[in-house]
Length: 142
Ligand code: GDP
Image 1 (cartoon, rainbow, N blue to C red):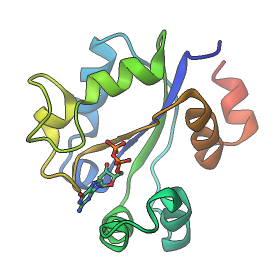
Image 2: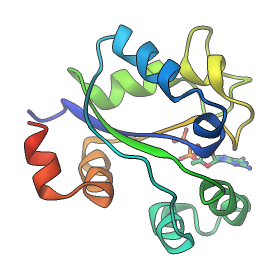
Image 3: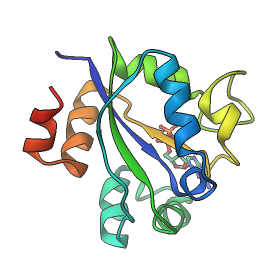
Image 4: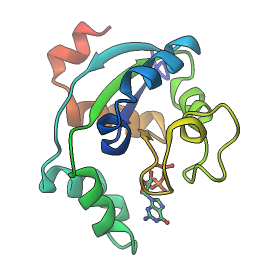
């Protein structure tokens, strides 16, 4: 089912504020199905690896500190054209720019503390799902 799944993370700002249930309910209401989920606290090494593409950006250290500041909730979500549909559902990186009704407009605090992550391509969705979930968990989700 190419294109049917994406990797989301409910980030530490939203998780620690007790917004995980509301965000998942909001996404389920838009037709996303949760196929894998866990609660974990990223280690520094994991956060650095996950965001390695941003290594040279000025916000990289701050982002790693934020993402390791408390528990987060990686999720595999399923829907037709999942990557695009989910990016549309979460809205722009900065909640100030996000459209009304998007997850980031509704639940995010700032450009960095922006409630959720979403993969930006099918290839990255697959790679990021494997970063958090075992083969057995991903197979069980099919
Ligand atoms: P996304 O795909 O919308 O999550 O955005 P990016 O891949 O460009 O950035 C990854 C994450 O880095 C974002 O979700 C934010 O948490 C953080 N971030 C992006 N841009 C900035 C910025 O200009 N300043 C800070 N402090 N954080 C940022």
